[in-house]
Image (cartoon, one colour):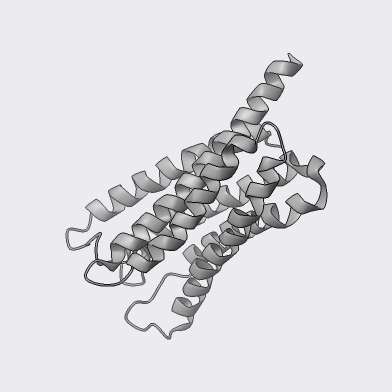
Length: 206
């Protein structure tokens, strides 16, 4: 069984991992625009090396997010039932993200089954993340070693919503990337909180 400390470390690495894969994959496509193209287009049906992106950019990060949800559920179990729904929502959000990577987007035929399933995974991941994002801060505030992360995590959730209003005009891709940045910064922040809490526990027990 992975310890909370290791799960926290994985979550901290996940944003760096995603950014690295994104920059490498996008740099291999000179025609790819960060301002106008969707991130999913790196793994669309007509994209070169689509499975490299979908596995490394969606499936693995999604599983890491799901693992963070499991780690938080275990860590916050002492707070009772109120921690169950948001931590399970975070796990589900990660699984939906991984699900979106299994079905590449079809940006030529947006009514195709694979595009519909990809969209369900992408939108479902974000919507369910909001349940975790708004549900966890009250839980964090009631736990002494976690109260410091309540407000920063909430700000990132709100910012992820605000970025949605930037997905119009001549640079719709900018809003999506800012939204992803808020999401992964949240994952890294909460992962650090989990790592920090278990680091203190280990130091105390020793």
